[in-house]
Length: 358
Image (tube, rainbow, N blue to C red; front, side):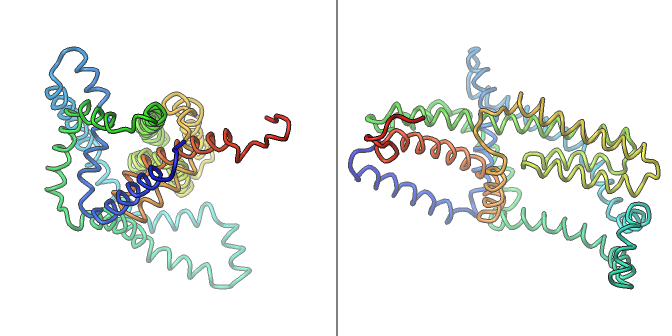
């Protein structure tokens, strides 16, 4: 694609300097990355309103206020319920562990008794003593993830800077994209523009579509499990919906948590079957309706690749890394497909002496 090594070395240097800057500045990047993510998510609404003749700055303010109001109302509706359910759940875990052992694990208990006498009693004591500690550890781990990412920026600064960044990004989006467009090298302008358009299509298709999938699954799991009588169904549904952004994790959490409480709570297999029916309904909606329609298979982001990117981002840069993991995965995927296409069109791949092969 490029002639000579000068341009290749230049762009390689730019990539290395960008990665180094992100690494050095990661303690202060969170509000800016979060603001950019919100702006990218909401910008299509601003564009649609601006095309109707409304001033873009007014559109940006209105959309941002509407988004903040929706999030605030959702938090007011959900947080009190989650707080009461999570608090009760932590206190009830030892009892549910005992019920689960009594109702659902007699065969496992007998097997352990034969292998190592007395091990079951020790496991019971440990489960009853430390089940609450496990839940507390999970809460502390989540808290450490957030507080570790906000080691330098306090919460007040985050709440102030993020909406300001989001507003200016949405207001100035045409100018920013125009500046990037004008800076592209003219010789390879069409190729680069095509790849940027593919990256935008891939990223927007996944992020916006997957957000809607998470919202729908949260309602399906929450309402469905409530109707079946599973305890703490609201907490399970909301958690499963949020975790559904990570491939496999949300579904796995919903199955494990729901079945554990159902087996501990119900003696009737009909009740347990109704819980399984709700879980199968959620899985079917995600796999055959919500996923294909809202995300689609054309985005070109394999679930395993997304899972790896999110884990790597969290490990390297904390919560900031989680936010930029999907964009980086989208960019990498598009560039990898382009590089493979270029390779297959080059003499390195083709044998000029051999007959044409598919």
